[in-house]
Length: 329
Image (cartoon, rainbow, N blue to C red):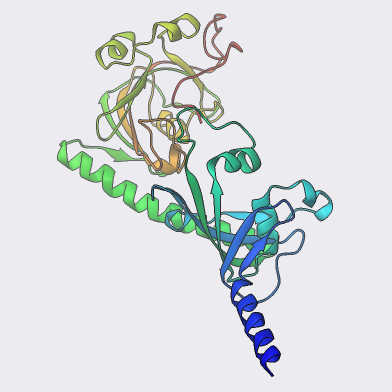
């Protein structure tokens, strides 16, 4: 009887010590399943949609996908190469809808096994990262694409409304009378030009200065403006002199708002245009000045408008040397 009680006590201790929530991937990544969902993990070709909070041991949040417009996802790859996958991918393979997991990983292991590159010198090498991951749902590709399209349309519509309000408030505050194109670009003509407005396929030579509604300048083709607003770059002038920029309407790789504006302007016209983010860079960040969903303003001057392509010198845009101007799409 006494031996039996000792064995039962030992078994109880072992059961308490054995935490079934602790898991490990084939590559050795350890994680804890803090909440278990239902169903089965994603099959090859299915889409696992998930969210996560990524923070460090100093309690700084590096990324929180719950606050983003679109959740992260993974299209489950073929199992043939699963042994070579990083631990995070292997863990996602095992998660069911509703599963919540926590991963603690040292920064050295994170960069070695997940990022697969050396730790950047500016990073604290003593940090530990924590992923709090929740598997939201599993979908087939077609359903996922439809849902993402609908979500994108809803977000774009919402952003359009915000941008329109921001532009109209700016116009009212600065007493600017502007017209609006069918596509949504606001424009105020400050100097009328002559002749017909630009058309698809025509070649426009344009001087421009770009800035945000907060008045932060990011690019210009006019040297004097560049020097006045802290944009002048002597290195840039070596490969791309300050000069009017050549645009083929509806065909050049500039933001869509430019093409729309050039079709309501003619030769010699000067105007200030206000471009909603959907017709600029949308949710893409383009450096320190142009943030996500940024409304852009441009002072434009249509220097010339031709039906035939102008001859470009070797160091001009369109010569094959590349174009690094900030408003390219």
